Image 1 (cartoon, rainbow, N blue to C red):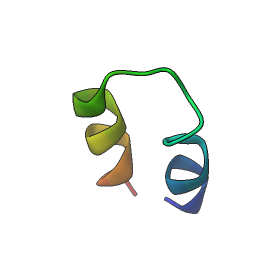
Image 2 (cartoon, helix red, strand yellow):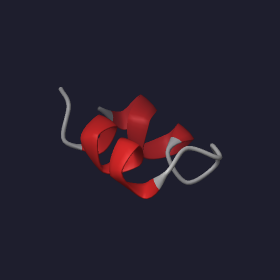
Image 3 (cartoon, helix red, strand yellow):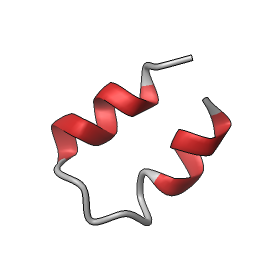
Image 4 (cartoon, rainbow, N blue to C red):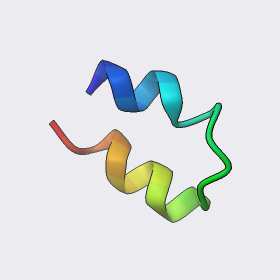
Length: 25
């Protein structure tokens, strides 16, 4: 999950995708 937390804010993905990745294990 740390990977998603790290790449989430840096990637141009929509917020809902970032949230989905954030809550993923």
